[in-house]
Length: 332
Image: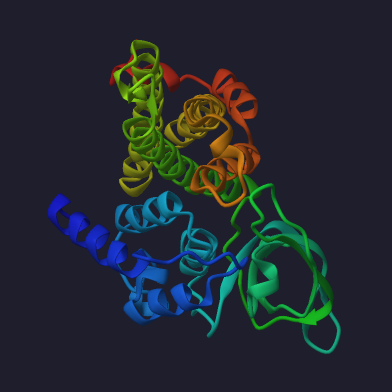
């Protein structure tokens, strides 16, 4: 899809987001508007009930939702659950459908049933959970019992309790846990880049409006240096996330390394961006009602989810043979 159409997506989703400031853990009104326009399942094939389009199209939506701090599970619903269902050729059930990052145990007793405790972001708001089973199948099951947990940003990071739950749908496709880890790392890299842009935008507004000694903070050289460092870090995060999305969408042979590099870069950058952002805002940025805190708590939370920078640096160091070719565009 062309850059012009991506800008149209940004404009349309931006219009839906305009003026919203929900403090609930799930913005149901926003979710309804996204469902009505099909943006909640962009990038998911139409033949299984999605909205069609490619991964880059979905990444545009996920990035923008992260920038605005929207409390909706598009990342977990389209980027993860939709991808798993597409791999399995299974239709998307009605209602909110999210993916688990754990495997469940399958057993047969009066039909196919699931057991286990599976970590499921946004599980409390989901009607169905998509997960992989120990036998290699992709399975869909209803959500009944949930243990509520949250990350630092207050986003639901629940545990769905499957106690002899009857399976809604199943397909033997054999998705490996490492594939789910990479997919989750990719979507968190996109979200981290979006939240980092929000910190930069807030910092720019603050130093332009706030005055000290009779002139805006933005006129001070030290502040300008901090802003430059912040902008550079945000740019690196966005470029690495965009490159990984492109590589995955194109099924590039270096896609796995691109994802690892993107998550390592964005997770490491999250710490830097949050630190500079709060330094530029001073005490104001720590208040609960300030938009900066919503962005930085997400940065700190998403940094750790699906592997932090240390984990992905180790994975990159252990990668066999292909890192050099990805970096240089050819063999050594």
